Amino acid sequence: MPPSPLFYFDSATLAAQAREVLGRLPRVTGEPIRIQRRRGLRDPHGAVHAGSYLRERRIAFDCSPGEFNRVFVHELFHFVWLRLGNRRRHSYEALLRLETEAGARGELGWSAEWRKQDLSATDVRSRTRRWREYCCESFCDSAAWLYSGVRRHEEFTLAGRHRDRRRRWFADLTEGRQISI
Image (tube, rainbow, N blue to C red; front, side, top):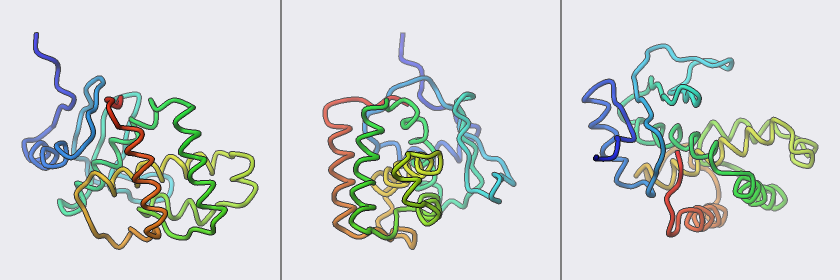
């Protein structure tokens, strides 16, 4: 019996857009995720390009074709973060703590950037919900920077030395193994 597909697309257009990105990703495994287009997506902060519905195993998009690759990878990596396990999540948090201690400014996407700007020293030290949400968004934005094929973007504002550390962290994560979605 052939393996089930990892993604179900609501349209041929979405499938074609995603096909380009899927070849750049590390090897992934897991139950299928439904990919759909939905107009007018919002969260408590306002309009959004996409939303991941982890329990429903679906991602809804409301972004331009020019933003799709970056947004697709970001949303897909919410599923990876969920299944990453505490040891690996804490390892990524440790990397971000080092950046914070070094005074690193900028990020690799706006969803992490605005959360980073709102953090206090207490958030970092106490691992508050705000800190953990920032870590998740940073992880997803970093994956999008690495795997989307987008080389330059106005939201890629993190300094090169910090980008290099993140690149190495992701290489260690994916080397010789599939990642679960």
